Image 1 (tube, rainbow, N blue to C red):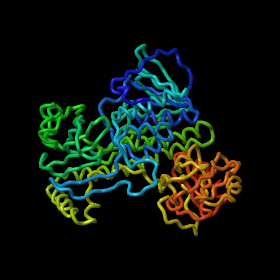
Image 2: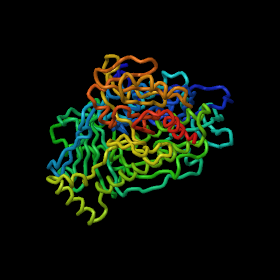
Image 3: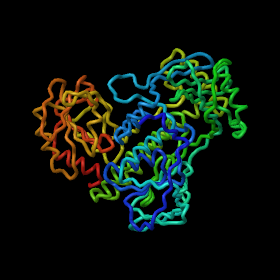
Image 4: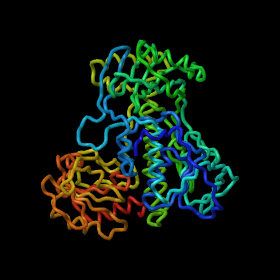
Length: 553
């Protein structure tokens, strides 16, 4: 589908009246933003019927969230639409930090080769929502109901009951579980008498999307105290369609209404670009940043995800990326619980794991915002001294914080992890709780990627030789849940094996990233987090790890 042919910002979806709905739906998702759509698609792909409610009939207007990280793109791949995002988005991995008019240093977010997806793409939120909606429309078991506003929620032992306001009047819907992905102001949260607590930063930022043809490279540029915006900071990012995102720090005293007016915005942009660059404003907003979260993301049969559960300032691109990871964490657990193949307490681990991830994001986002917007003379002196040292000193560069960029949380303390066995030592980042690393592979002579082979439920990955295929198949056969066997062999050693997915480690990167010796085994969850690893293939150890990963023991 040609992406330029659809204006996702003006698209309106048809409201359809429905007859009385007495069914108890497995899952109702509230909110058709990126998080709600991702959750609905993930569940639907697993065969779960989903009702998706949205109080509007449009997608996002304005670019809003624009930075989507490698991990999120890998999740979109599993949702069946990753390629569209990468094709349309602006890929980047280099960032530059400036003090006044001097470049202090540059950094590379993906310094190594051998990954299918870039470190980041920049893509306007309306494209993200549009592509996810297109994918949702392809799935027959997603029922999207536009102009369905939730106005009440109750719970019983058996189900949740939602009161819905539609153009045709008030209706009632029931569900076994509800995912509340209804944004930072979350009406669902308010209706349930719940709060999101945290910190509001005493500063304001002007965010301007500017359409222009410019010579800036496809990089993230961040200025501290530039000559065109003294004593403040500025961030520049490129988006598709010749649109550039510019963030101007304004200070707490700025009038948010006045600062959005073109006569105030245009001179600021002109000062950055120079007198001769032609541009037009596409979207303008003024933000006050907050870092906050709910005490717990699970309340009975209602599970909160994305901005409704947690919010961060945008420095570091942690909001939307973290929300999509919420959906990724929740969907497989809901599927198992709905199928009666896991106890309901598995959903408590959604809350604990993603609360941990939210705390990590809030901590990093708070540090970024504190560095960018020092609130005392002492902190400003420290900040400015750090910046000057960063010109020449590597250690100081690590202290400069213009937004530590989003990385997936390592769920190291998750109760679903199986600790390494005594005597098993590993020298790599792929410990229990980590998101699986990608690597180039060859499958039946064709080039591919490791993560593409690690989809569809639990996966057991054995590093070995073709002769190990039968033992792997036997080790994962007949367990409490299906485990897909994947055998990773050195380049040139591939041989087909019945019931086993055999992949060649073409450059040896998979073995290196997983510190794999012959016989090394990894058990991966459906969301591609490592939940166990051993140096030898052991059926009982796999069965025990699988039970632990599903709260069966």
